[in-house]
Image (tube, rainbow over all chains, first blue to last red; front, side, top):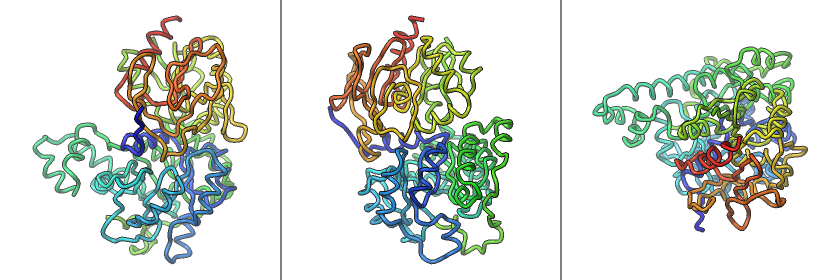
Length: 295
Length: 190
């Protein structure tokens, strides 16, 4: 029996198993356990949630391997970790810890302002952010096995996540309505490989799972993104920067499953306590917007 | 025949597509009323802790157990196998299952995601491509259980009465052999 590990099918298949679920940012073992008990389908282990990275400033890097391993030991669900855009050595280190997914993330300070990581070189699968279809397809071409719309991390403002989901969805719908001889120019305009553009035009969807991220703070936000066509949601600062994290975490999990049922959504939205305070994306000076990182 | 796929979390759409490809009417199951309306149930791949948590919260846990006990044909892949096992090793603290299969399943038995793999296996006398993702295996089983496939010397596909479970994900490939086996060999007994 010959076993093949690290194949595209195995990497993309892992993301298929996360669908319909919530992936939560956690900074310690206690939070990881709260997330697992609330029904998170995976946790993202990091030292500072995006809201704190934004508030404290400075260079944000991968987390301490000790911290990641403690979380791996504490929960049975998949554990993800972030590396800086283009920092393939951070990725090698995180892969050696046998993390289940790596997020090459704009939330951390980029290490390379031209190139992303060549993700085909790794056995561990990668998720990458995207603000539009061309960016998503460039990441997939580099080996990303899952895409998340970027939104604007650490804000609690869902408007950018909405923009990015509408953009990606709209560009996909446009491709499906094109004549085959128009796809060459579409590929040029999207700055994406023709083969992937053709595949999207034929199937009407990305070849990998599409989650959404960046600014989701309430069960209604999570359901909004699911109704917009997301396969699942990442919630970063939104849970553990709120008044009652355990309660809010469980509510967001329920809302992600019953995203089309307004009665359930009303029920889970009751008595959640304070949401994270948040920042309007419009109030953030352009150079400080994380979604603009990555190219 | 109307096939229900438990749609709380995981790759339920792929199981619905596979069931439709086999010629069966298929629906997503999220409520007790939907559960009551189906002639067979599929528990998809996904995160077993999340699925059982949601089943408990939304009052599906006992109804699913009851229908399994009544002999409803059920097929579970990966997380679905865990949910059908009477006993789990390496589960989350206090993790419950629906049960029905007299097996002990080891969660994430092959290792973490970097150890996930695809391989040709022999399923019920036929070679097929199997995709294993953070997959469980069957650690122990009683004489009531029939082994349909093995990998790394452990059972990875089993059957007992009207229940079938695989540690791998036939729904991620175009091979319908496992779904056809479930519909043609198990569901026909009903």
